[in-house]
Length: 275
Image 1 (tube, rainbow, N blue to C red):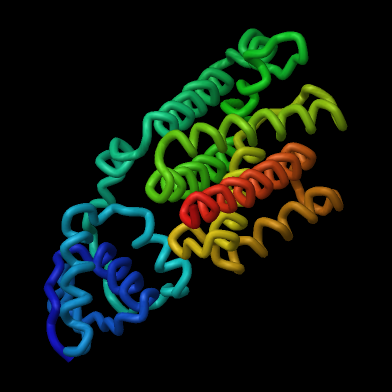
Image 2: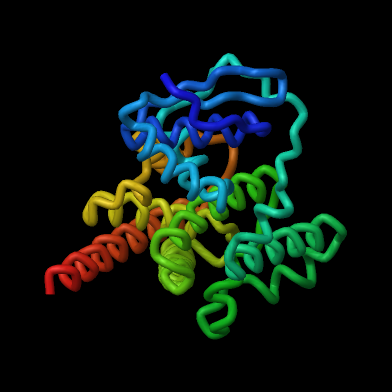
């Protein structure tokens, strides 16, 4: 095999190597030191790998490199990841304004709840059919740190996938549709005592899943293991077998709305390409 490049960030190298393997370019990592690694590819695929390397070097934080590790299932590379910084702030600043805004508002609202502002803030953000602003505001309310962190991780991951592949306006569309569908369904079948971004997260999942499947866009597709996990979680919630109370109808409403929107937009895109 031939050396493609060397990298001083083992995490990034692992993601890029997994991405190359996911697109059928054989790649192997060879440790050089505790903080650097060499990437080896076959000679016949070297030119193709070089083109991918150019794109990677221009933007190494693209979601597709992280997603490739999920797809390939790379959990034990035998490499030491050392103490290199995660660069969380630069990564966050590269996200779309909508992703940043929803994330920061969710953190601020949760902080206000923890500091004693629940009694006056919750009634203002609580869903009400007569107050249009509350048709969306439940998405920024979370009632535990685990609830908040879990939702924001998926929101940033899936939201960035949609932004990268389809553009910012499609993320706005998916957010609005799934937020409205999930909040209205939860209110209709249960009550107004709910909150969280989970309905939107399920909506993003449904959108990526069905859009990727319908359009053949492998970069937006979700791995079966992730879909299976989220669907099992949904079923367990309805079966009341979990240790926490969940807005199950919001989850289901978001999933259905996102999936339907994904199929609709994918078919429109395929039709426009034909014409």
